[in-house]
Length: 140
Image (cartoon, rainbow, N blue to C red; front, side, top):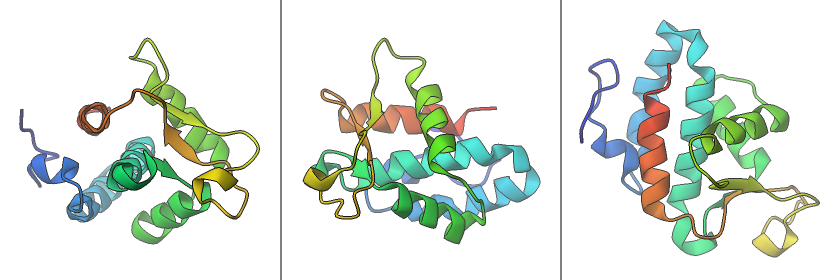
């Protein structure tokens, strides 16, 4: 199913690995037009980072990487607590947690800084993440 984000970009580029950067400009415009879209932008950025490296790390991203990406690309300031709240919102429609975060650092996941990475849970596939990206883009 294809849809448009304010008529700007076809959804297919949002879920293709390696092409999620195409959504940055439309999301910047969305944020400018509707500053209340912060949660949507954070959720989209999180999910695309998880999808982008899914084959190499099973879907994991460090908080500092995600926070820096959001700040640099959207000029939005966020923090670990806010992102964890968004993870809970993403998980709500499911009867299990599709996204989780580690407590106590992620040294075993290549996160040498000791940060607690955000990641997909066991059994969460790329197709589930792609479907959730489409859902997130339809958040009000």
